[in-house]
Length: 162
View 1: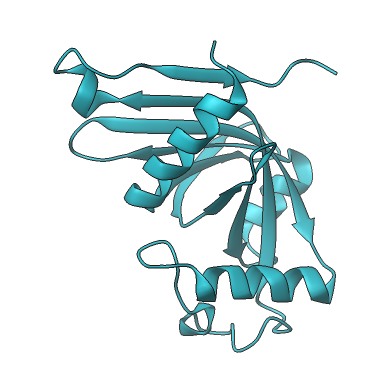
View 2: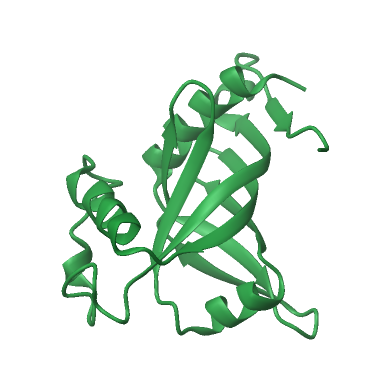
């Protein structure tokens, strides 16, 4: 295992380069479901937090009402892969939703985008706009493009039990 200060920056770099993640949730009957989403991450030197702009009235939201943990994986054709297992929480406060909206709108491409391009997301106050906050409990960064050349390192981190 590596420490978070080594793993998190490598995770963010790879995730923001790949951009789209396969995200798994679990239905109330235990059936897993996946979809492709566009998280954005921030490493402040101490903690890693992610956000997903998404609809609060979706099958995904109903799954999260039952089980708030998700697993997400980024992959690209060079075999670079990074994975995060996360605890999630919905941000409902107007200030939090505005901050998340601005975070996406002001981030550089390809991870940044104007949320208003999504139908029903005219403003951060739109009923269809929701923000899911991600708190990783496990990270894995597999730089397959380097490891296949005998370079680079597999990085893995797990939050200690509380």
